[in-house]
Image (cartoon, rainbow, N blue to C red; front, side, top):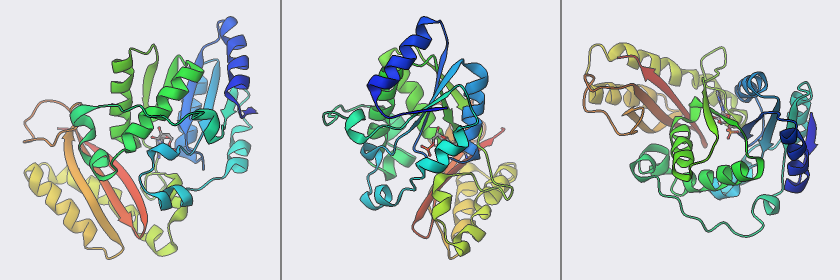
Length: 281
Ligand code: AMP
């Protein structure tokens, strides 16, 4: 593992790797690494000769300044975790390294960004597209790895790559969960003990929703999920939508063609958590 702070230094080592025909994988993260991130790194290491793990808390994707301020930053522990991977470069740039000038680009993802995360976090996906396109430009990876926990982000990135015609393969990676079902997230570290204790209900209720899909119409399944989660005083649903996996638009009925995904955002106190589940119907 090698820790690199500047784009110049990173490009220097990557050019030499590329000249030796080595393949390059990229795992973009905001740090505070956990086993979910490491599952992406493991896969990237299996499938590429060199892997860049970027650790960068990207200011342009935060629409809430408190969230940006409180986001956990644990670069020393992160470097320690990645020290076991000989083929990994950590790229941990300063903001001025990624944005030497303010990024004024505006991306338009159409209906993909007007729902769910895009609706409740205006500007979020524009910031994600800005930073990911910059990372792609700096690193020119053969493959880039994204977790399906951020299902809408994965759709947006696929769209970005298609829109820009970039020669990078986007690899989706399964959600990694704690033993009690809570999807791993850097934000879990911010939960109080009381909130942490109730958060496994989110995935349990999503699993019940998959069973209830055999009984109720989508709207009723949706209503029941929201009601059950909100019946816990420590949890508050921001949205729950059952959407088509490609269009991200709410489904009209279970007989609609294509895979369906139930996507949820829940506040546990001031900590915002997201998760999703596939409906195999
Ligand atoms: P983040 O640091 O939260 O921006 O996440 C960096 C990458 O790791 C994103 O592609 C996430 O989707 C992915 N990721 C985060 N948590 C998990 C998880 N529990 N399981 C799988 N992938 C994850």
